Image 1 (cartoon, protein in one colour):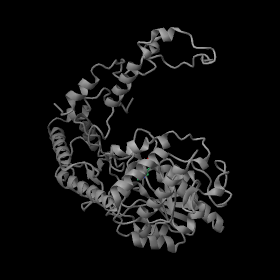
Image 2: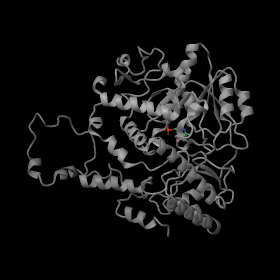
Image 3: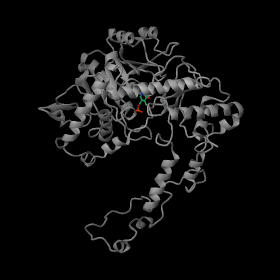
Image 4: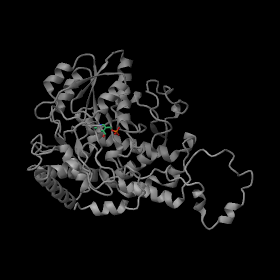
Length: 503
Ligand SMILES: Cc1ncc(COP(=O)(O)O)c(C=O)c1O
């Protein structure tokens, strides 16, 4: 029986289930009058009508009435039905699902920050500007950039901000460049962001080693190209060792080099995008800097640029004047979407209020507690763990590109009787989240790699955990060899079985 099988069934045994096996929704838990149980022990209080001044004036708005205890049980049950990094390995390539230290959650709850009101006058938010000014500097230091705006709310949002900066730069020069290039291994958000920023997107092929095809890139670099977007290491887990040649070719064409920082976890403190020749960077704070990724919660995608592009950064940008951190004073009156008075070339605002302060606080706490050496060690261990898994799994799932990888590795399902997809579904029964499959998470593998999986163990998994995972992979590999039907019917231990993609 799979290791987690019993736990999973016990955890959900008492869940009220619908016909489909799914838990009831909070709406379905509604029982008229149930909410009045909340203050059990003070029923006399409840029977006393509230003084008119305090009585609710409006009529019910249709929220379900559920007793407090049932609300708690409902959400606890739901949390047990989904897989998270706090309850099992999550080697989802390109997502950096690492464990986030809880101390940073504590920091994000500091009363001075949590009690600040979004509508509060920016002048009264000294602590926020202090945090922003310091964090901007730290992100510039880690990425090798000169100026930074923390406001974008996610990686894709940072991409959009960065591309708008690039567009504004060429518009100011009167140099119309309508094309953005992305490699065929790019995350799906890259071409989507380019389109949203008004560019026409062209795809650069990979070569046989999984790197950017330099010959093709050179041919595609016409005077219409504004930028080339690249993540290094790529979403194949490979470091672009021709990065200097790529940067030179892009710059010789008058174009800019954009760094998708989603894979920064592989090289923190080792090499900086700015030193590799990148001009614009976004950082997925919710992958690299201690905010849980996934589940649709808030993230942050700060965008950082070289000095020549600083004028175009969106607002707000924190500055230090006479030793005091503050929002760039002249920007205060700028309305969302409006160009900034003091920085007439700024692309405006990307986010209501000032961005996701709680997420940025976690990033600050993470960077301060890790320190420069700690960051470097985190990346070194992320790379070591990925290579260890790649080596251990090779007899079953050979690497698509037979070389050392960086923080993640692309493994081939060519030896499987079923497929990488079926294999991944069976891992769920053993408490391991499926690795990334082609097309999933907007990741595309070049060529015709239908049966492959991208595995990213991250630095926070111990060697014991990696060995445990290898053991599970071996078990499923044997099942694949002896009982295809079993693997094809997985997952068997979850409340919701496989989603029928055919009907
Ligand atoms: C390589 C890459 N780029 C960009 C993104 C987009 O980031 P976000 O999901 O925060 O919008 C991701 C997300 O997983 C990614 O893996």
